[in-house]
Length: 179
Ligand SMILES: Cc1cc2nc3c(=O)[nH]c(=O)nc-3n(C[C@H](O)[C@H](O)[C@H](O)COP(=O)(O)OP(=O)(O)OC[C@H]3O[C@@H](n4cnc5c(N)ncnc54)[C@H](O)[C@@H]3O)c2cc1C
Image 1 (tube, protein in one colour):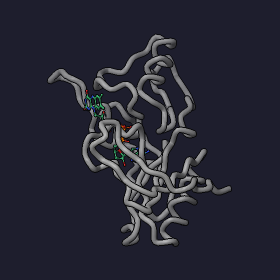
Image 2 (cartoon, helix red, strand yellow):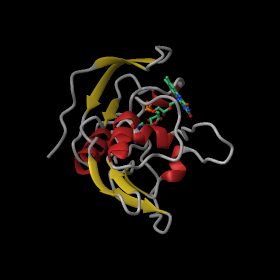
Image 3 (cartoon, protein in one colour):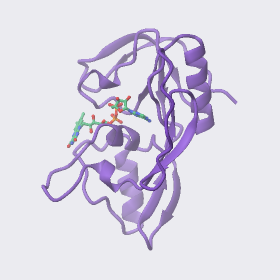
Image 4 (cartoon, protein in one colour):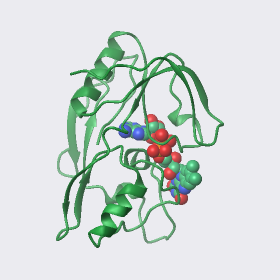
Protein backbone atom coordinates (compact mmCIF):
# COMPACT_ATOMS: atom_id res chain seq x y z
CA UNK A 1 0.00 0.00 0.00
CA UNK A 2 1.58 3.30 -0.99
CA UNK A 3 1.26 6.76 0.51
CA UNK A 4 0.04 9.16 -2.18
CA UNK A 5 1.92 12.43 -2.54
CA UNK A 6 -0.12 15.54 -1.80
CA UNK A 7 -0.31 18.41 -4.29
CA UNK A 8 2.84 20.57 -4.38
CA UNK A 9 2.76 23.22 -1.69
CA UNK A 10 5.06 25.74 -0.01
CA UNK A 11 6.86 24.94 3.27
CA UNK A 12 8.45 27.05 5.98
CA UNK A 13 10.09 26.13 9.23
CA UNK A 14 8.79 27.28 12.62
CA UNK A 15 10.97 30.38 12.66
CA UNK A 16 10.14 31.30 9.05
CA UNK A 17 13.77 31.75 8.06
CA UNK A 18 13.82 28.62 5.86
CA UNK A 19 11.33 28.09 3.05
CA UNK A 20 10.78 25.85 0.04
CA UNK A 21 8.36 25.96 -2.86
CA UNK A 22 6.40 23.19 -4.59
CA UNK A 23 7.17 20.50 -2.07
CA UNK A 24 5.23 17.25 -2.35
CA UNK A 25 4.24 15.91 1.04
CA UNK A 26 3.96 12.20 1.86
CA UNK A 27 2.31 11.11 5.12
CA UNK A 28 2.96 7.38 5.45
CA UNK A 29 1.22 5.33 8.13
CA UNK A 30 3.83 2.59 8.36
CA UNK A 31 7.55 2.07 7.81
CA UNK A 32 6.66 0.02 4.74
CA UNK A 33 4.72 2.96 3.28
CA UNK A 34 7.63 5.27 4.06
CA UNK A 35 9.92 2.83 2.31
CA UNK A 36 7.66 2.84 -0.76
CA UNK A 37 7.75 6.66 -0.79
CA UNK A 38 11.55 6.66 -0.75
CA UNK A 39 11.81 4.05 -3.51
CA UNK A 40 9.31 5.92 -5.72
CA UNK A 41 11.08 9.26 -5.15
CA UNK A 42 14.45 7.78 -6.10
CA UNK A 43 12.89 6.26 -9.20
CA UNK A 44 11.46 9.68 -10.15
CA UNK A 45 14.73 11.50 -9.43
CA UNK A 46 13.33 13.47 -6.47
CA UNK A 47 15.24 14.07 -3.25
CA UNK A 48 13.58 13.02 0.01
CA UNK A 49 13.64 14.93 3.27
CA UNK A 50 12.02 13.74 6.49
CA UNK A 51 10.35 16.50 8.49
CA UNK A 52 9.07 16.75 12.04
CA UNK A 53 7.65 19.93 13.51
CA UNK A 54 10.02 22.14 11.51
CA UNK A 55 11.57 23.51 14.70
CA UNK A 56 15.14 23.31 13.42
CA UNK A 57 16.19 26.89 12.80
CA UNK A 58 18.66 26.19 10.03
CA UNK A 59 18.43 24.55 6.61
CA UNK A 60 18.77 20.94 7.77
CA UNK A 61 15.01 20.42 7.62
CA UNK A 62 14.46 22.26 4.34
CA UNK A 63 13.33 20.04 1.47
CA UNK A 64 14.51 20.72 -2.06
CA UNK A 65 12.09 22.63 -4.26
CA UNK A 66 10.26 19.91 -6.17
CA UNK A 67 11.39 17.33 -3.65
CA UNK A 68 9.43 14.97 -1.44
CA UNK A 69 8.89 15.71 2.22
CA UNK A 70 8.04 12.77 4.48
CA UNK A 71 6.03 13.73 7.56
CA UNK A 72 5.36 11.18 10.29
CA UNK A 73 2.27 12.78 11.82
CA UNK A 74 0.41 9.55 11.00
CA UNK A 75 3.17 7.51 12.64
CA UNK A 76 2.86 8.99 16.10
CA UNK A 77 1.38 6.36 18.42
CA UNK A 78 2.47 4.61 21.54
CA UNK A 79 3.53 1.04 20.70
CA UNK A 80 4.46 -0.35 24.14
CA UNK A 81 5.15 0.89 27.64
CA UNK A 82 6.78 -1.22 30.36
CA UNK A 83 6.36 0.57 33.67
CA UNK A 84 8.74 -1.85 35.37
CA UNK A 85 11.79 -1.35 33.18
CA UNK A 86 10.82 2.11 31.96
CA UNK A 87 11.29 0.96 28.36
CA UNK A 88 8.82 2.77 26.12
CA UNK A 89 8.33 2.26 22.38
CA UNK A 90 6.78 5.07 20.37
CA UNK A 91 6.65 5.94 16.70
CA UNK A 92 8.88 8.69 15.41
CA UNK A 93 6.23 11.30 14.65
CA UNK A 94 5.08 11.59 18.26
CA UNK A 95 5.71 15.02 19.78
CA UNK A 96 7.65 15.39 23.01
CA UNK A 97 4.54 16.96 24.50
CA UNK A 98 2.48 13.83 23.86
CA UNK A 99 5.29 11.56 25.04
CA UNK A 100 5.61 13.52 28.27
CA UNK A 101 1.86 13.19 28.93
CA UNK A 102 1.97 9.43 28.34
CA UNK A 103 5.01 9.01 30.56
CA UNK A 104 3.49 11.10 33.35
CA UNK A 105 0.33 8.97 33.33
CA UNK A 106 2.56 5.93 33.89
CA UNK A 107 4.65 7.59 36.59
CA UNK A 108 7.65 7.89 34.27
CA UNK A 109 9.60 10.82 32.82
CA UNK A 110 12.43 11.56 30.42
CA UNK A 111 15.76 12.06 32.17
CA UNK A 112 16.16 15.39 30.46
CA UNK A 113 14.92 17.21 27.35
CA UNK A 114 15.05 20.54 25.56
CA UNK A 115 12.58 23.41 25.75
CA UNK A 116 10.49 22.90 22.59
CA UNK A 117 7.75 20.36 23.36
CA UNK A 118 6.29 20.51 19.85
CA UNK A 119 9.38 18.83 18.39
CA UNK A 120 8.94 15.23 17.30
CA UNK A 121 10.87 12.35 18.81
CA UNK A 122 12.55 11.59 15.48
CA UNK A 123 13.49 15.22 14.85
CA UNK A 124 14.86 15.64 18.36
CA UNK A 125 16.92 12.45 18.09
CA UNK A 126 18.19 13.37 14.62
CA UNK A 127 19.49 16.74 15.78
CA UNK A 128 20.96 15.90 19.18
CA UNK A 129 18.34 18.00 20.96
CA UNK A 130 19.38 18.48 24.57
CA UNK A 131 18.40 20.13 27.83
CA UNK A 132 20.63 21.70 30.41
CA UNK A 133 22.81 19.96 33.01
CA UNK A 134 26.38 18.83 32.49
CA UNK A 135 25.61 15.35 33.83
CA UNK A 136 22.82 14.63 31.31
CA UNK A 137 23.20 13.45 27.74
CA UNK A 138 21.14 14.60 24.76
CA UNK A 139 17.71 13.05 24.22
CA UNK A 140 19.28 10.52 21.85
CA UNK A 141 21.27 9.00 24.74
CA UNK A 142 17.95 7.75 26.16
CA UNK A 143 17.21 5.75 23.01
CA UNK A 144 17.64 1.97 23.11
CA UNK A 145 16.69 1.07 19.51
CA UNK A 146 15.46 2.67 16.30
CA UNK A 147 13.58 1.43 13.29
CA UNK A 148 14.95 3.31 10.30
CA UNK A 149 14.06 3.55 6.62
CA UNK A 150 17.32 3.82 4.72
CA UNK A 151 17.86 5.81 1.55
CA UNK A 152 17.48 2.67 -0.57
CA UNK A 153 14.11 1.92 1.06
CA UNK A 154 15.40 -0.86 3.29
CA UNK A 155 13.80 -0.95 6.76
CA UNK A 156 16.29 -1.83 9.51
CA UNK A 157 16.35 -1.90 13.28
CA UNK A 158 19.42 -0.46 14.96
CA UNK A 159 20.44 -0.77 18.59
CA UNK A 160 23.62 -0.82 20.57
CA UNK A 161 24.05 -4.53 19.89
CA UNK A 162 22.76 -4.47 16.32
CA UNK A 163 24.13 -1.99 13.81
CA UNK A 164 23.15 -3.20 10.34
CA UNK A 165 25.44 -2.01 7.59
CA UNK A 166 23.95 0.59 5.29
CA UNK A 167 24.50 0.43 1.56
CA UNK A 168 25.55 3.78 0.00
CA UNK A 169 22.49 5.86 -0.94
CA UNK A 170 21.63 6.46 -4.58
CA UNK A 171 22.82 9.85 -5.76
CA UNK A 172 19.34 11.39 -5.69
CA UNK A 173 18.27 10.28 -2.22
CA UNK A 174 18.91 11.50 1.28
CA UNK A 175 18.07 9.50 4.38
CA UNK A 176 14.65 9.33 5.96
CA UNK A 177 13.55 7.39 8.99
CA UNK A 178 10.41 6.22 10.70
CA UNK A 179 9.73 5.40 14.32
C1 LIG B 1 10.84 27.01 20.47
C2 LIG B 1 12.03 26.06 20.28
C3 LIG B 1 12.71 25.63 21.39
C4 LIG B 1 13.81 24.76 21.23
N1 LIG B 1 14.48 24.33 22.34
C5 LIG B 1 15.57 23.54 22.22
C6 LIG B 1 16.31 23.12 23.35
O1 LIG B 1 15.99 23.47 24.49
N2 LIG B 1 17.38 22.30 23.14
C7 LIG B 1 17.76 21.89 21.90
O2 LIG B 1 18.74 21.15 21.77
N3 LIG B 1 17.08 22.27 20.80
C8 LIG B 1 16.00 23.08 20.93
N4 LIG B 1 15.31 23.47 19.81
C9 LIG B 1 15.66 22.88 18.53
C10 LIG B 1 14.75 21.68 18.23
O3 LIG B 1 14.58 20.86 19.36
C11 LIG B 1 15.39 20.80 17.14
O4 LIG B 1 15.54 21.59 16.00
C12 LIG B 1 14.56 19.56 16.77
O5 LIG B 1 15.14 18.92 15.68
C13 LIG B 1 13.19 19.89 16.35
O6 LIG B 1 12.50 18.69 16.01
P1 LIG B 1 11.49 18.72 14.79
O7 LIG B 1 10.55 17.58 14.97
O8 LIG B 1 10.91 20.07 14.67
O9 LIG B 1 12.49 18.42 13.59
P2 LIG B 1 12.61 19.21 12.18
O10 LIG B 1 13.06 20.61 12.46
O11 LIG B 1 11.36 19.05 11.41
O12 LIG B 1 13.78 18.39 11.51
C14 LIG B 1 15.10 18.52 12.05
C15 LIG B 1 16.00 17.49 11.36
O13 LIG B 1 15.59 16.17 11.74
C16 LIG B 1 15.32 15.43 10.57
N5 LIG B 1 14.15 14.59 10.83
C17 LIG B 1 12.94 14.98 11.28
N6 LIG B 1 12.11 13.93 11.36
C18 LIG B 1 12.84 12.86 10.95
C19 LIG B 1 12.55 11.49 10.78
N7 LIG B 1 11.34 10.99 11.05
N8 LIG B 1 13.54 10.68 10.34
C20 LIG B 1 14.77 11.18 10.06
N9 LIG B 1 15.09 12.45 10.18
C21 LIG B 1 14.15 13.29 10.62
C22 LIG B 1 15.00 16.45 9.48
O14 LIG B 1 15.24 15.93 8.18
C23 LIG B 1 15.97 17.55 9.84
O15 LIG B 1 17.24 17.26 9.33
C24 LIG B 1 14.21 24.33 19.94
C25 LIG B 1 13.49 24.78 18.81
C26 LIG B 1 12.42 25.65 18.97
C27 LIG B 1 11.69 26.16 17.77
